Image (cartoon, rainbow, N blue to C red; front, side, top):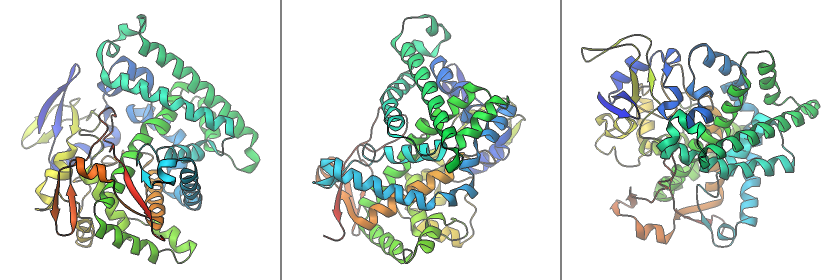
Length: 440
């Protein structure tokens, strides 16, 4: 355990699985750091969202928004997400010249609208052309706004609200547009109620009943649509990069996909398969990619309501903890001598051995309070990987291979120095993949 300082607060950094278990076994009772210890701009943008609130407020908001993201709900989306993914890739081939004619795919820029628009469909129901276009138009402003949050400076302090700062004006403008858009999306969902009730209707009803505030709902919807899509894209893009650089694994996974595509029921079960009950190479590849490329170096700061004893030392209640994801996911000797290599088979070996990985691996959080959207995110990620590998052999673009520092292990490339987007708060690759049709 170490101590770090961020902003005006200090945090204890957890690096051992045993410490993580002691701290996070009651994560649903933890108190999240106010606005992630990120200041005024963050507080106004996401300080009241589900992921950053605690106690009774968290329970109330979670109850109001969780229905479409529960594990049992994902089976209703499995056919739709496959159809949506196929249509998206066809449109990308037709509209994106670099991909359609030259077979070059940027795994973040070219694919990020796919989970974004699918989650919008889950929450709001089908959108008309105007609503979808306006939703897309919100993305650049929201991205620039979050860059201002990350960059810090004077906007961290409450006095910023009284100053003529571009970031504060941008915040007010975005929040108004976001609120107006949601009201119109809700109105459309009401008018289309006869074709099935979109979850946004129940969410607005929860606000009307006083279960949660309008601000909590709007910020939680922002979190679902913008913040969590960045997280989903991190997992999706790095999985594709690792598969592109490991052709033997890619070939084996393609064979597994083919074996599970004999009929719709078999394919649906494959995409919905539970890692603990029916482990697959597809699931192992996603887990191994997320292990080697954690989306953030540290978890969100949060405090326990009671003292904790760690290695004989008492840590007082109210102390903020963060988890060092690299210490758990990569540096821990538990993962073996080859722990810095991409080897999905390690997950299948450990699963057969019945090893409990619950507190050894950081991805969706720990304990009772984990990421609300993890089941939908996993389903979308699996659908995209399956669709791409069924239709294309993927490899690194030649320019990317030249830029990286490569070494060979057997017949596989081990390149851990790929370019990434240093302006994003989530660790995203910034490179091109070469896609060649499997039928060519």
